Image (cartoon, rainbow, N blue to C red; front, side, top):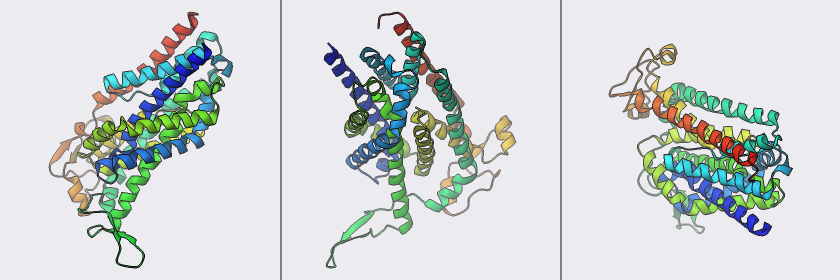
Length: 386
């Protein structure tokens, strides 16, 4: 009976990691694949390797926190561990059904907190620390990207010039005695550097995804001693890789197609800021949501870009409707970045860059899924059924 239950727990852990790999690969490598910098197979391979690296290094702290600090390790019976993993899988189902990036980390912590409340073993100090970072981290993500979008973005766009030229990026020169890689006939050094940057940022995002998410798949099983730490990380990393090579193909198509209407630079800024924030939180053992941080980065960057044509006071008060140029990219490429407060031709409403209604709906579901997880978990564990 115990062996059968452990087998079910391992299957659920693989299911969770599989879905994490499917969704995180699209987020991390969508810009690179959508701009034809990488193919889907190389993207999946890089996702697997860097997610495993993130889990093997920073991810251990998160596994320890979720597997024995929120509640004592003794609370993680095999049945309880499988139940917690079930709630994480349920969060993925809700996320896919409603099209909202629900946080598996927050849902897992909610389920563990419900278990601790039901048995009177919840460490309120640890829980308060985690919840505090859940509040602070999205605010930091928003304002960092808002400042970048308002004051820095146009100049970065004019300097980097991330457009791809026709033809291969590099080619193999066989004229000499030793074949050498050279830049393609239409490739400039700036283009090559920006392309390397796209891939590097994608790998960094994969690293942070692994650091943050391996705990969601295996922390309860590691906490009760059913699986050793190294084995659990390898299991989670393998499951993430399986998702990257299979269902991630669809998410890569979706993200890549969506990003063709947006500058790649915006995606790179979002990825860099959110990955840095999640890597920091993982290093101090805080289970946090990469999806939440990335989405607040998108919101902040859009708000910052949309408010360039008004003063900061007007933007915060909403007394003016900010306008941005739909052809700003062309102007910036000519090093004619509009000055702060200036309007450009072909105005575009800020609603196209920052939609408060959509933002509110996403935030509502972020609060809903961990809350439901905690309440349902508490009801289940306090009933005595488990």
